[in-house]
Amino acid sequence: MRQIWIDCDPGHDDAMAILTACAHPEKLHILGISTVGGNQTLHKVTQNAKNVLRFIGADIPLAMGQQGPLVKPLNTAPEAHGESGMDGPYFGDGDYPLASENAVVYIYRQIMACPDKVTLVALAPLTNIALLLRTFPEVCGRIDCISMMGGGISHGNCTPLAEFNIYADPEAAHIVFHSGVPIVMSGLDVTEQATVTVAQIGSLQNRGRVSHLAYELLHFYNESGRQFGFTDSPVHDLCAVAWLLAPEIFRGSRRFVDVSTDEGASRGQTFADCRPVPAHPANALVLEGVDRERFSALLLDALARLDRGYHAGG
Ligand code: RIB
Ligand code: CA
Image (cartoon, rainbow, N blue to C red; front, side):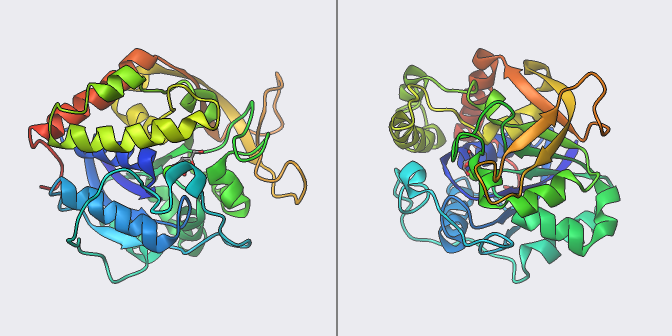
């Protein structure tokens, strides 16, 4: 059983990652979920997290983190995720309990109280994670690894060189990559292979209650992905959870990865030292490939489990 904490900015693909994690309580114990400004404002992504957790009847602690990046203003992504940050389904009224403490303090207390090491699952700009590691450096020794969706060695998406989660807060990402905490990096090199097909999305429409929710989310996200040149939309964030559940479907290399915090064209770029003798020891397992069929099957199986009411914290 792996103890995990999920930091996210739902976000259609964040929602798939959360649902898949909730569908495997036999493997993943979710200590809690935190939100951070990213895809949309902190308020909107927190409301989206509440809606997803309420929809499946979860009983998982939820805490709100930072409004935006450490240094620069927040630039949201309505073009990808819509004005709500998770356009598509209508969740209706209803609420979900929210911790009174800021997520950074809440995560710290949860990790230090946990008898086992904790895996951080980072699906958003790394602002909360960076503040956690800097404010409470003693927590680093209690973290098994950070399984993150972020960056890209060969290319970006926000800019030719930078991926959204890193570009949103490069200073935070630099802190995390230089923290000494082991990283499993699901960058665009692997996440753009991690797709669910239009036919697979269609198969969810009338299969069950949670599957239908996923249909509404993925149908919107897939249509939105077309503007960026994708026929089948990558479910980026799900890779960070899928690696925890089925590492064997991925392949990768251990690399030293650094982050550019410059002001120029390279701002937010994650670059790896691929020389035969790199200048620094590896700080990340950089995922480079995934078995798409087995990846998409993991999601569809998780949704089927949730349709049957099998989930964490319920
Ligand atoms: O670049 C993809 C990342 O940006 C994902 O985390 C997605 O949710 C958006 O936040
Ligand atoms: Ca995200």
